[in-house]
Image 1: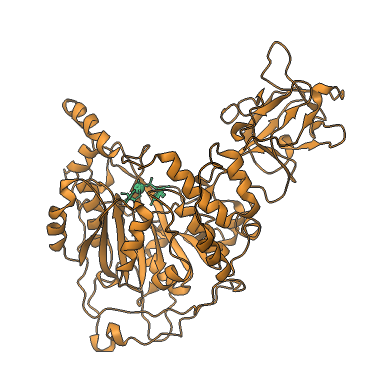
Image 2: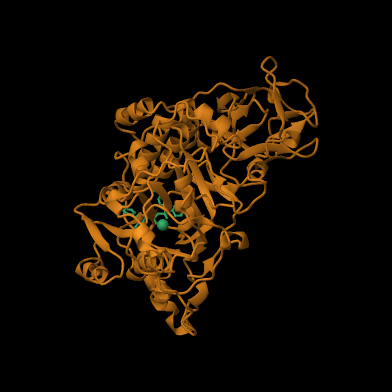
Length: 576
Ligand code: LR7
Ligand code: MN
């Protein structure tokens, strides 16, 4: 069981906190709490190259606390128990109008109680889990720019309503130069009335979410920092399992399962517990299915912590001291994007652990578009941030990023010397180590023979994904030398891949399709012959062939005849 309390520790179930603690005298005051060093648990993790900090945790149980109120269903109210809100026909126009402001259904959000009830979505096995009674305190940091009143306050209330009061040190709201009236005085006055200490920090000029979080973190007095986006809803028992995991090893950074609050209806929809975080060649964060090996490592226990290669970025808890030891955030990053991958790589490469704790569920309003401005342009900012990630953490695999995103080479990473020095100082491991040990399923192949364009010797055209999707045919077009759709890797596993797509043929005369890479050879195995320049499909023995004249953009699979139309050159000729 998870009951890890050493001598004198009581094991409790989540939710059990709103019971009076007997014998208050036995509890120590916050400032005289001794360093508890008997809760050391060896996770069997190698320490070499990592940060050397004590693994033990100083645990505090506050003397005074109020039980968290129980959230009951307000029957008949819209959205209770996480149900979808239906907007009456006569309000559809207004709804559409209001949608634009935040890129979610503001009208629906405004109709729902700030204290709305939710279903307890946890796996049955989570409800009876035992956690140490002595957990660290946490401060919640929520940064926002022009957030809607109801989503912001519903986030705050869900924290208040569903966190054991003794664990909740304070809630810190960081206003990143919002321009909305309701986020000014009105907000200050409102938070002053809350039953949990809550205050608003203001950044004078737009600083972006990364620097806003750094500002919030500075004011944290709890032992753990918990970051949330400004449009979340925490569910029953969300906090204890996060903190309990940090007690076991303070170099573990933990995320809840991020459920979906529909941007259309505000329905609370549980996310799969079988997805983890990855990324593609463009350095976009992506959810992927958890591989079998990780399920096996967890003995198929769906309530056990899940080691994830990357995190989404908005919702996680981290030991405060560790947050700084490991290099907090890269202050050179602007507005939005990249910081989540930067932190993920840094945690793993520098000796930490990044996990999703499946017993913790927090909902987040996912939306299709960003509602706010990106001063200087979205592409410029996002590419700048991503280039910093690539320059500091990716080693040679940065080439995948630069090859894939057109314009990435031009976007300036700026001065990254401090971040590289941090990597040195912490003696962080290489990206190869990360790919080998943490993320062998990565779309960035560990070993590859070639990365670049693939040009037909006869037609002088290049293989091109044509921006097509899964299952569609591969194309060829004029070699533009700009990377993007014309970049392919020829891997040691004998795949010809572009990001998550692999050349795939299931019959001997084609077609040659682009299919999600499965890393299992089969229809996706090709052998390039450096001498005669053929790309031979192992299963069928046939060769990749230039298109015929009646369909000049679709390469074929034909019996190998060693003609020039079957010769492909793997020599990058990029124009950057
Ligand atoms: O300039 C800004 N200043 C801010 O304070 C821009 C944004 N913000 C605030 C904003 O109000 C919000 O509270 O920062 C927070 C995140 O911005 P969102 O909600 O527009 O971003 P997102 O949910 O699309 O983005 C995800 O990726 C981001 C990359 O920088 C951050 O890491 C977000 O925290 C992250 N959100 C999540 O991880 C929730 C799950 C989404 C997924 C996947
Ligand atoms: Mn968000």
